[in-house]
Image 1 (cartoon, rainbow over the protein chains, first blue to last red):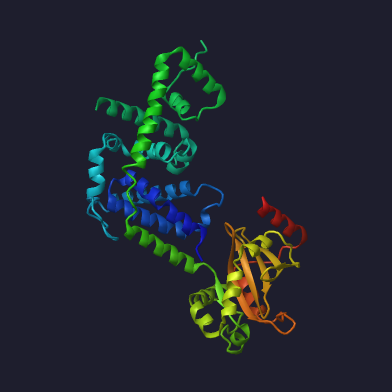
Image 2 (image 1 turned 90 degrees about the vertical axis):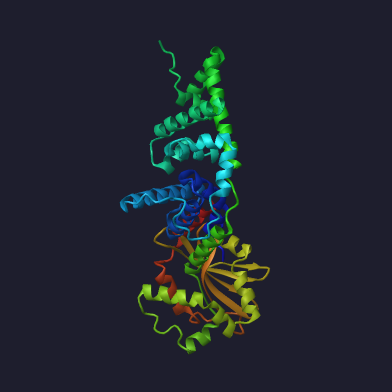
Length: 163
Length: 252
């Protein structure tokens, strides 16, 4: 019997992966993050409140999983090359995404932004979440969301106008 | 001077439609008066469009089949672990003492239920008729779900494919509402529990042949049902007002 959360998860996979790519910029690592986040979500399925946004709940789990991953890497004292590690599930390689990045001026500009600006940009302008929803996912005050977002967008306009 | 200081954040929030009315009106006025302000707002609109187009295009490659398969496998494993058990022909089950003593602690029972759930193929393969399969499928019929959200305990309704009797309602510790009910078809009946997590889901079912009267004697699996309800922490049934209130909550 398919459960509601299972169906929601499958439907959300493309967007989860897209957000994971914004976070880590590595296709193989992104796939790993998504897989790990899904595992966490299923293990804690009871903590999702039906009627609230499932996507926002998943984005938060995914991002927390990413932060844990960074902490673990730091704790292990390893500056692992993100493109070579954790190839658990068949790695299609970096080619497709990188070539798209090269092709796209905007994408390159986005990619040059600091991580804290990239993720808020992705959530608000890419995923159409409100400032408040983004603040809850990122666990920062709404004012922080706004200042990071404004800086990211000004920079984006500057970079693309100069191109 | 009472002039509003128009920070980037305020202009951006205006462009995103996130400003409350008094401030939004002030920004709209400033925009008319000052082309520089208008320009900054247009830039924020532009950056949103840029991000959006980059995001929906380049960064949305197909989900790799390997990832899709891995997550689907996780979901299947998760769904298999959900409390859900089917025992067919409770008479034979009782005779062969498959359930053993039903006084073991809830955790042990939960574990044994999981085993039964994993062994559905075995049970149905051994005992069940095609009729039983149909009956099991009917437990998940939208008409049954609809009546579970509507009918008070102790009442019966006739459905196109059988007679539904709602027996009792329970509130689990995590607040989930569960209802025990019986679905009777011509020669068979199922005692089942459905819990409401984002819609009704049957979590437990016992099926057996009806006696000539079309009624399954209440001890024909009553022990297993009681033990199941205990194992999930159902507690005392909701009666009268408590049930009415629970039913109104789900109708909202």
